[in-house]
Image 1: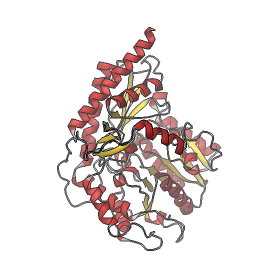
Image 2: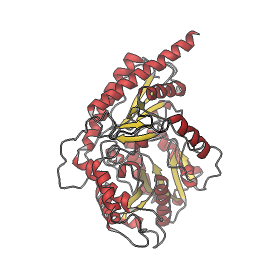
Image 3: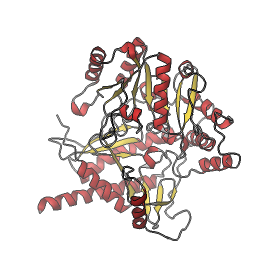
Image 4: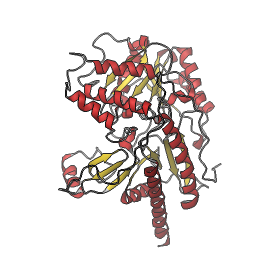
Amino acid sequence: MPRKNNASVAKPRKTASKAKTSRKPKAPVVVEAVTQAPVALAPTRTNAELLARREAAVPRGVASAAPIFAAQAENAELWDVEGRRYIDFAGGIAVLNTGHRHPSVVAAAKAQEDLYTHTSFQVVPYEPYVALAEKLNALAPGDAPKKTLLVTTGAEAVENAVKIARAHTGRPGIIAFSGGYHGRTLMTLGLTGKVSPYKKDVGPFPSDIFRAPFPDARNGVTVDDALKALETLFLTDADPERVAAIILEPVLGEGGYHPVPAEMWQALRAICDKHGILLISDEIQAGFGRTGTWFAIEHSGVVPDLITVAKSMAGGYPIAGVIGRADVMDALAPGGLGGTYGGNPVACAAALAAIEAIESEGLLARSTALGETFRARFAEIGARTAPYRMWDIRGLGAMLAVEFVTDFDTATPDAAFTKSVIGHALKRGLILLACGMHGNAVRIMVPLTASDAIIEEGLAIFEAALADAIAVETAIAAE
């Protein structure tokens, strides 16, 4: 039955970070708000002018959530080309856990640029790649020896994880889950469990990809139901002796910020061990402190065989990777892995600095604290400003989403209302993004370095935008 309250969902189990570092983290460092643009720029063009140029030059398939153009950014704030200030709760789609232009990250990148910017690691290798691989191997959960491959994008990381799993096991099959998002290449689209807008009109997709249901309490799918369906899949379509890997996001990203229950991870680990299948945790959106641990799967206590990473690993610089058991990662022959730009030295330097900032500034603890703040404040705001419209508050740590419905009696997803809230928030100076199978959830990806003042200002704007959306809906209904 639908819940008739605005309380958040029960908090998931938490575990301590497994980062292997001898230095105790400092108290959380919270950068104060910068209400003035860091550098004064005279507007020379307008958002409308740039939007017209964009529409003429860029394919319509490359969507932009906001019709504004960035001019400057600092920590959790952004200024457009017309000089207007915005609070950024989107973080470049969960890329900026350390904020826009973190001083240490920018300094490390600039220092590397003074030495060399590219040699291709496959031609002339360099220390930053090795140092970052060593760091990631040490941070990843589990005691087995590990190795890391560095690439450029999250989709590329997933593609390579599939290659590695197939090479190690000698099997072709990959099992993914409904609602999962793994990228926009053909292989990763095949794994992605959401049609619109990603998979529409671009099939057929690669073979030997199988779909299992994600446990979804909202729709009455329990963990037991999901596991029984997986066993049925083994009987009907996916012979477990031909399955190389099971891949799953520990918190569904585009699918609505639903955390994987710990018992689901534990059952999958046992199933994989039983059948010789590799377990892949896709941490591209959930990793690097977003949930209060380095990797979101740590909340379950389960150790995966492979982990895909990207997004917040380098504080805004493009880099991604696959971390895994050394014996698994060594499955391909020399030349079987790589890419011209993979592990770019500037991005490696930025990633090392971003990881150091997360450690030294106590951002894992900050993520947990922010999650508690957002849960409490969203519950208050929902009850006060939009009763029986905020169906759920869910996630792990600071990786949270709020789901909107038409009412609590039917719990019908309300994408139009969600879009209205986001639109009104942008008008008031807050950048938000939607997610979910029905596009009816607002997700929070604010930098973990955002000050308490900025968080509260953003929440106040959110509540005002929520009131705006209610007022517009009321006015339309009265006509």
